[in-house]
Image 1 (cartoon, one colour):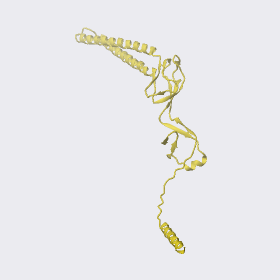
Image 2 (spheres, helix red, strand yellow):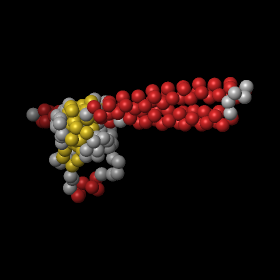
Image 3 (cartoon, one colour):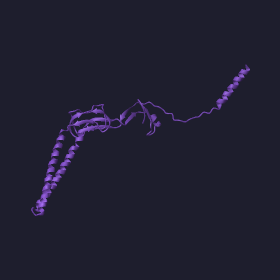
Length: 221
């Protein structure tokens, strides 16, 4: 019996000696802390859609909740008046072009006749003056046509970004007044996450610190 006890005691001492000589490596690492706080996501950018021209809405192509792509047509303002104006100004340009062509012919004829003293200098001067006035009228008519055509894109209102329609304030047939909102959009990217945190957490955060947020899925932001 004494031998058995002695043997057990010796085994225990050997095990203890081996345990005392084990080397344990300590690794320093960051241990994240997780806090729970209610919050919500929201669009960083919001867009107010309005018309630059007053007119009746002939088509309103979106509803609240719709997702629209960048450049997608949202609504159309009555283009009838604008189209009529364009046609009228085109005729003014055509008339001015004919007048300039006739005035050039007169100047050329008077210059030829003046060389042989068949026409007075005064008539030649008046012909040149008429040509200058005709050319000026043609330039004004062309500028007016450009300005009239420039209104066309504003009658076909498109989305400037990929967004969601969050509010619709008008219907087809309504009068769109310049500067008055017709639609509100929220740009889909980027989104922001808003939450409130206890005051004691503020000491744990630094400016522009990147944190991991867990929603339905995880993302860094």
